[in-house]
Image (cartoon, protein in one colour):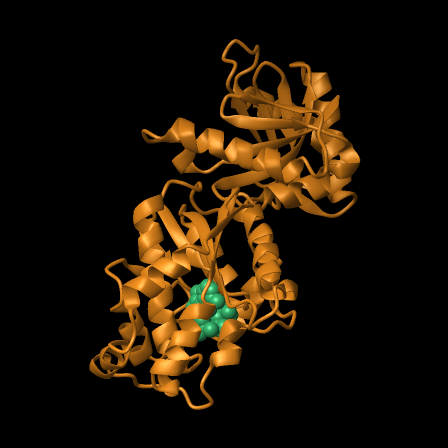
Length: 386
Ligand code: ATP
Ligand code: MG
């Protein structure tokens, strides 16, 4: 009897033209997430991935696989010969491990991929069910609402499992286009990227810093956050741009109260240039309506106006508490709350406009050489492979 982990994929993996690509990407993603813990090898058999690894690491491995989108279930399975006695020994062991002496109801579900197996599925269900009832006084059959199910998959071998670990759900990465996430270093933007990735969007990120006005810590923090995100998004590129010349130009030529809005409009314009070059279809931000001055409806629309690219804001209607809860769940919270001096905190106005009018902002921007400032900023571009 051999213990393995089995990974079942969601519906979308099994259908559609790009199936093979999603599947290979997901396999690479799983491999990347589990290699830090270690495994011996893996193989595919009729749609499921089986992973051979040290049983002591199973829980850690499951946790890492639970960070990959598009996975329905992960199971700890026993692989045995296709013989009813061997199958039952595995069933017995699995029930003892998962349910001990608890009073529970169960149902046996056999799935026969190998149609030449000597019993039909209903026949094997009865054979195994009877053996369970003989051995376990604490268990009863309930075929409608069982407390747990005994799964037996008959393939080239028989695979037995009695407890399933849910996957993260969502769609496989790459199935919903490419987005560029504006990653600031706060709590919100990693969560925004996570939510879009969950719907299958391939996420790359961009961080704006303003060294030497702020320390390089802000940049390192963005790199660390991108690494945490990459557990979910898979490999990504992090674009880094120095915005300090733009901040300086705004500070000496524009109304100080407009600094945040105008700098955001520059961020969006720079992103648009990169999007055209690197093929991003949308921008993604961590804005949440009303959270701060730059996130009033007026501010958001004035920022949006700076570029023709759609801006997705998956957190727009979420409360801060719910965003914080999600960031804890995905593991970015602790990193996000480390103190750092954001570019905005140096140049930020004490009293920012909360209801900017596009006309006035554009007037103020007329004091700047926008194209030139954008091109200079683009020259500072660094690309970090995460
Ligand atoms: P977060 O918690 O994500 O840092 P925030 O609460 O600090 O956001 P804002 O500063 O208003 O809120 O930023 C709103 C959004 O604008 C961020 O979620 C992010 O997408 C983008 N953004 C802000 N500053 C930067 C930056 N320096 N680099 C990249 N994106 C940024
Ligand atoms: Mg915020």
